[in-house]
Length: 115
Image (tube, rainbow, N blue to C red; front, top):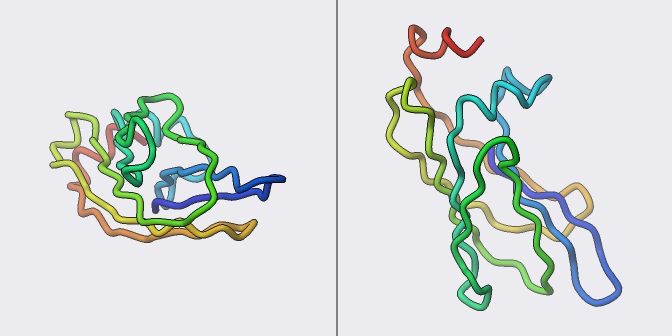
């Protein structure tokens, strides 16, 4: 899943984008091993508007006042033999934020090396 958390500030919002993998929530160790980087494409008013986050921290925190769709490109570890996965997540400025689910098919033989 790709999602965001949010907190209201005196003038705007502080939001954090994140990537989580079902079945691996108990430890970010697996997530950061399976994902090489996540590239977040932001609204063009942000400079820079494309930010790459590499392991161990795949999160991106920013401040702003308006919501917009964030394109997230997940680049997998080469051993998984997967093409990058694009996900578009709409920012939500609620305290619990929101999540966008996506299904990625992985071959078990490659996935088992990360468990």
